[in-house]
Image (cartoon, rainbow, N blue to C red; front, side, top):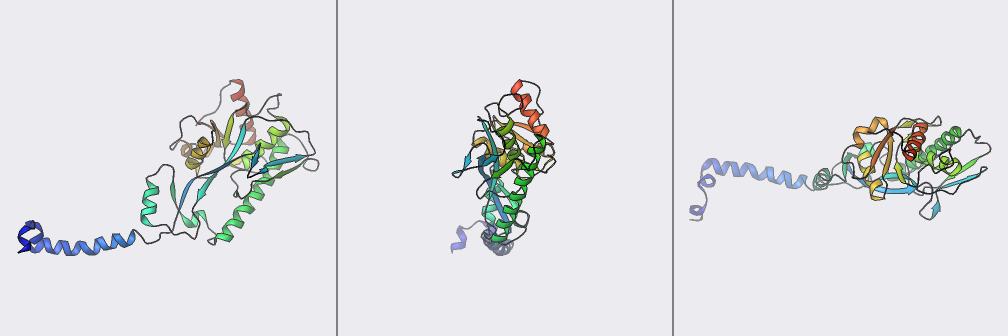
Amino acid sequence: MPSRNLPPALTSPRGRALALCALPVLALFAVAAFVPLPYTLESPGDTADTLGSYQGARVITISGAPQRETSGQLRVVTVSATNPDKRNSLWDALSAWVDPKRAVVPTDEVYPQGDPQDANEATQQQMTESQDSATLAALGYLHLSPDQVKVTVNLGEIGGPSGGQMLALGIIDKIAGDGRGGELTGGRDVAGTGTIDADGRVGQVGGIPLKTQAARAAGATVFLLPRSECAQGKVNTPDGLRLIPVDTLSDSVAALQALNSGAAVPHC
């Protein structure tokens, strides 16, 4: 009797067969929605002004050379990632996939070490190496000897190598400004990313679309990035953020000097 109220498509033999076949498929999707997947979710992270303090501690301390009073900001930007031991579900991944302020990345690309403790130690080691390279690049640019000028960097728990460029610029601004008696920042809130080696070469880092979001949220109006990552920089670029591509530390200083003087500035 109840079948009289059902559509013919569901009461016919073919319809019943299709319904029975659909049940395991639906069950499979239901299970997949909650099974942990080997993906990490990323979002815009903290920023730290290399000319100021972060988490209560001065970021850059210099001895052995006169220091200037600075204005404006030179911000290191970061990406926040879920812990490697957190297994995100299909629903987590799908919701992040459609959100321009989040990204879905294979966990083994973000945490190749696997273990959270090993991953943290690796990123801290990368930051230490980045600080050393930034110091050598900045002092080399200024023609100062690392034997006479000492630089200490404190970025708390921020790890990885991507803050190198902005640390080097922070050292230069504290010691020499724009080299013409003015501020390297021109009083602006400048953010950026990029590894740096001791010779001042700026390298690519990844996560650019999330870093531009973090920079703009912190108030930055200028964003320095490796030239090779311009295409990534133009993905969901926040309104009011000017992208400036560079290859070297000298490029970065020259671009900021040009910005301050009203001259032509490279753009993505």
